[in-house]
Image (cartoon, rainbow, N blue to C red):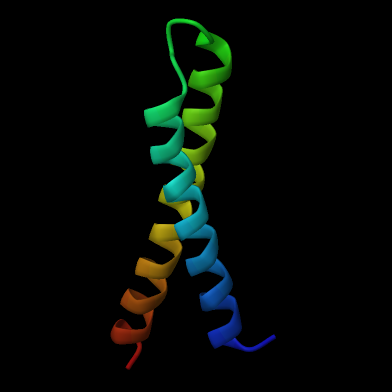
Length: 66
């Protein structure tokens, strides 16, 4: 697999998880569905953070090993 395609996939995952995170924050009531909302918020936040740091570390590595 090419690097550009992998970076594109990671970027798409980042966008999807980030928008899911904000949609959950806006539309899910944490007082009514406590376990469901907290678990979805944690999962989407972890996915968005890991995909962001994957992209970030890739470019740091690319700059460092240049």
